[in-house]
Image (tube, rainbow over all chains, first blue to last red; front, side, top):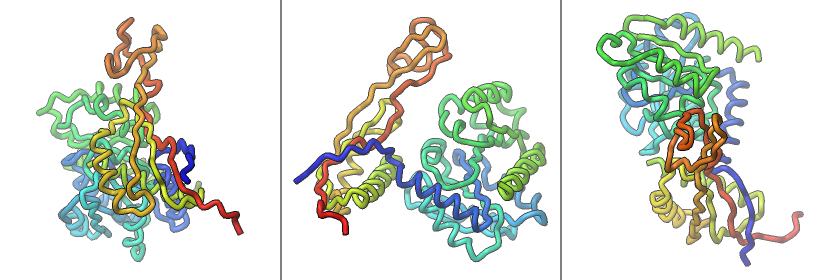
Length: 221
Length: 121
């Protein structure tokens, strides 16, 4: 006999719980995890490469590259001497907590203290699934345009920090930084915003100082 | 595809529910989907029909979708209007100081299930 069970549960309920468990596990293991989200081609790997170089000697950075296919990104990071693994989602548009845990386990034998999860290049789905990360960081590259906060509000709302990359290309695009700042702050008043160029190094100090300060705060929380 | 991932999450959450409620088999599943939740119902059903045949817990179970109309509140004139027709701009006073009241939902409302009612040991 069939009976009706009322649930009123979010679809992602099992993932939300798994993500909370993973966050606590990582705290015990001393791994500070950041979920890096953006559109394809925003310069995630270039930004990470620069950040890894700049932080050398101060902390050990590990990177989990999530892509639908290929391992070109992990090879770029590995070439810098950082610990990296490549995850394949086999067509899935986002990374969830279970996949993140598998990635962390693959990195576990290593000595990373700060780990970046480079999520799938996509402004929609990654914002909807909690990966278990301690901080969410979004990248918006200048050529993508200043209208993105209007079109993809959820990711701006879910992020703790926003990096506006490729600032060195500003003379070639109609991108109004003040308009973006206003639009992003309307969605998320507490978000930290860093305009940077990984190529020239502009703004990288402010971003790296914030990152290290967040890590220190997390360690002592 | 977005809906593929969502269906996997629905099935995983149903697995948890089944354990908690001593469910042997699920006869049907009802979802509540807001008009502006970004979910394409046709694709969701296609993905469901594919995956349900691969999991004995939900094998053959139909997926029902109840749509929730999206409504937006204007904070300037307190008008409540239909989001899909008018978007972010209030049709009465033209203000953009508006926010979504409902329509972003995406939840599992209920299931029909065959349970194992033997008392716990």
